[in-house]
Length: 436
Image 1: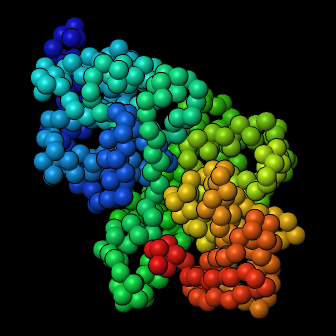
Image 2: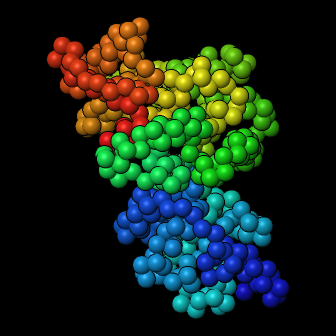
Image 3: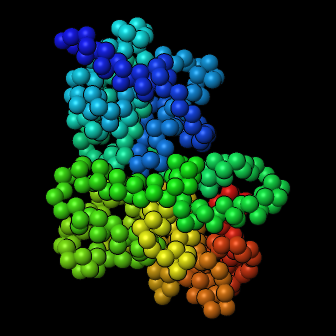
């Protein structure tokens, strides 16, 4: 395979550190929803591409999936080949070498070959698509591809993979997962009420510092700062060979200070003294890295949607908190950001909009077929001062889309009432996040 056995031993030693048949023995807390989803996707197709912001737990999920199959006696450790393209020695390989790595695995580990190959951060290797496609076309091997900031919708990727893949996005921990990581499992309404005090105590941390798994387990805020720096440098500056890295950093910090706020590219360009084209391009990079999500205004005209101001949300509120902004002054925006990310998990970005007429409605759920029509308003607290504004924004959106029931998500209020013919339900966010 290689020119000399020393190279084989070197590569095999690297692989051993990542594989369950080798030295890898790290344990992860379960994330059952993703494990079940991955299992279903692989039954339908032989390539699953997993994307998501760096450190959201993509790699951990692939190991949890493998352990799930091994535990249920559907596989053994030698059925899996984990290849991490960020490892020294692997990162320097080319696409032809990847096939040689599989051959080395057959010769030295399992002559039958792998049933599953996990390509971790594979887009570090140029031409990876052709290798994955070749394996899919010539074998029955199931492949899982993970990447931080992989543009799976790129034409080159779709052409190269011939529509053979299914896609899954992984987010930092949901609130339910967050509670589970802290040893609190909620399975019934009775358990919900019994643990209300603890749930709200954890909510107070989750709203501001989010759900990156390692942070949740360690509570070290320096981890979040390191994540932000790494995402900006590795997934944007390095990946796109940007010479003016400070421009991206300045834009990112500006967006982090304006989460859940309407903002125009023209205004951003003026503040940062950049061209609108540069701002648009950088926001595109930040979106591909799954760091920020620009939310469009709802309109039946696609042209008007594209031209309208966007609202910006960050994938995890902890990144805004460690950027040094006053969390108490902006607590309503942090609450709204939590609601947005949960909606993103449940419905996907294409079905979520905001509405703006005489008043604003924070979220509209509306898919291309006109189904799942829901209007949602988010406010920390419904008071005499803001009640009319919040209700009127909701009512206007409901009227325009013929929605009969609306939802107001608050920090800890619960109520229901009617305004004209419209039913409005007020729900505390901790109940809503836990689907109660």
